[in-house]
Image (cartoon, rainbow over all chains, first blue to last red; front, top):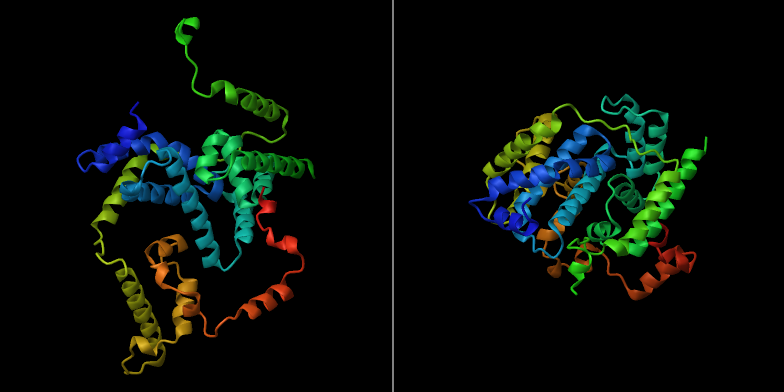
Length: 180
Length: 171
């Protein structure tokens, strides 16, 4: 597998960039898809945000200084794109971000790409009720199985604060699931 | 004897033992939790196979658009779009043959256009191209704010000092 540093060099070089971009998409598309899907929940919106993320990465690769890993930088772009997408959507609909999140979860039942049972629906309701940061940390740790050090670089938050966030989020979700 | 030889040439990833107790504890916690691992999300068949092509053709489309040399042009185009669409609406409603200029638009019309239309730029993107150094708070205020006004406002609107620690409940 090609190293991250040489992939970045190839992406910056006009002669090799189109091939390198395909390698980049193939390497990260599935992971970034699920990261975005867990924020916006619906497949079509995820597809839009994911495509925008890759296009932004490609257009801004010259500005990538290598201070962080390419992987963290792309996750950060994907996270910002997904959150901005939700913000723009709620503004367009004239409702608050929290109202939008509740509405999206309610719509999951009718979503053809959601095959969850009652427990999965309840799980999404519990996650939607968390503050943005706790939600991100919980998804990245529990479902995406990222290391605290990796999440720390993506969200620019200390490992200690992340552990506390994750612990709080898991407790809140467990309490929500137990509660009938 | 070298470190490598002691272990017959085997190596472990850097930081493996430091992180081991954390990941074991996480695994144990996960096994005892009631939170399901299956979320119920599905992806249309063949989606990932077709994704590369979709991104590449979207990128080509983006690149074929003319890139403005001056970033402020974005605003000129937006301003022209605002003016044109509002003039069209006004023109259709009143059916008058008067000529309107950008000056005829009320500031509130322009503000509400930006408020209710998604013009494809996040506040971060605007911040990137706006020369913030040249902007002062007074440029956006009609009346001057004095220190005593700020002190009065804080006195009237903040009940307890802890209210200022806004980040605490995030962790």
